[in-house]
Image 1 (tube, rainbow, N blue to C red):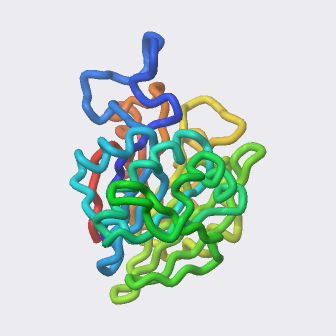
Image 2 (image 1 turned 90 degrees about the horizontal axis):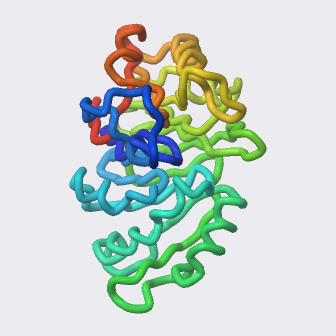
Length: 259
């Protein structure tokens, strides 16, 4: 299994427009963060989770050349607005619609933003086409199993995702944009090799975990390796990571993890 962090920043990105003084050291490239999304290869099946506004450049920079399944965790702009660039993967998949999974609300927003793409195949080569499907509790794909669970994100609910590779049993839990990880999510993530958690900033936020809250959650979940993602400019990679336990790290754009 391989996990690629295409982006690890918030809705404003880092550096943000007119970024205030202080915060992270922009001389460190690990502090330059595009909006959050990941790419997972599981048993030869390629899954894209969310499409940030920078999705096209994320794919080019990380040499993403195949997507078999797309999952939208929730329809906030920093996770959905790059979906038009999925058009190239329709071409690469032989000109057929790309399966797009999300919640009822997520699918509704996809229909509102990309009505021209809701069809069985692209109108012409180079156009997008999405085959919309409600994300089930358990989704079997050729490479293994993807389980979903609802997580709280302010007034919205988002999808947490647990990937289990069929041939190896390797397991990844991905919980971004959430205020906490509840009992059901923790149960599904038991024995995960890698856990990824939302760790927005040092100060409290109504719909995201702080770095300390995410760190404590990671300790309680007990994965061999955990990463924090979706970080603001207030999280400096070097100084923040130095304070974390050895098996809890900060993700950064372009990080690849294979196990």
